[in-house]
Length: 199
Ligand code: TYD
Image (cartoon, rainbow, N blue to C red; front, side, top):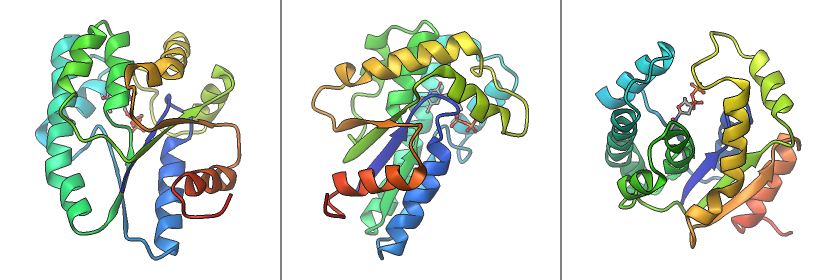
């Protein structure tokens, strides 16, 4: 199974990805936790450098870097893991591109077209906070410099676009999760939707 977690910066995706991977392993299911943008190929490394410098440059070129990073990630990491029988839990995927690159000014149709051939996840969850303050307080606890995107108005716009995301991907298995709930409750909910536990 190829599983994806999405949400704005500070929504708790990374913690939840790690926790879901551990839960799966505890059930005897081999599981690999991974993320985008990667750090494993030249495209991912270039993206990380641009984000650190808070200078993403031309938005279409940046979008193309994301697409190429994703293509390599699928080929080098995700498909081999799935082929070996492992489940894959991915922190961000093509849904982030639709949200972030279109907010940078890239036409949504261009982003959608660039990502069209990529494997549709078996399940994808969007962590939805009740307010932007949740995101801010969570990001305050994180060490290191705030990155380019971590600005309040931008966070609000990412929240709004995430809320509308399923309309851009009809037929894909996208569900919302309440980001204010405890991790254990979210894990139970995800396991239920995967048919791993009785509701
Ligand atoms: P993130 O996972 O939040 O990195 P970290 O937890 O290390 O800070 O991702 C970094 C940023 O990349 C994030 O602000 C969203 C952005 N991003 C895009 O703009 N497009 C994409 O397709 C992806 C996957 C991420």
